[in-house]
Length: 171
Image (cartoon, rainbow, N blue to C red; front, side, top):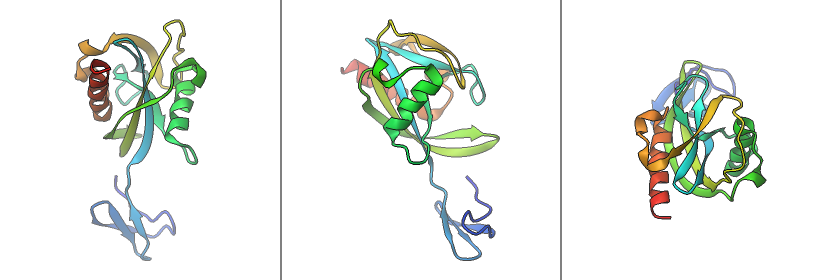
């Protein structure tokens, strides 16, 4: 992420080191990653995956999730995204269990954004039917052990899927 202007005063900013920028008025600015929250819904060794309906990664596999909004916890964001992308309510899935976190990059309007992604896993009743909404084209049930990491749209989702495979193997 590149920062050209101070978000406090609008003055030009210059890169210092690491993730720090400094504006001409002396305000420090940090290019911290943006938080995201995602859920893998599972039944046995199968996982429900979203098929992306938009770029980046249109047609590739994804978890259900997205950016954490202001004044929202990771759990609240995960449940909100569950409703926005799958039309499901919190009571329609099992409890959220922390799975892993990962750093990734998300291309938003041609700007690469660094994200800090937190992933949960939850059980899911096969009789409950998700409805593709928002940026989801469709859903697919897949056997977790038979998926290639190349089928996923982003590095953070790929690394979290490896953690999911381990979780399901040792469950």
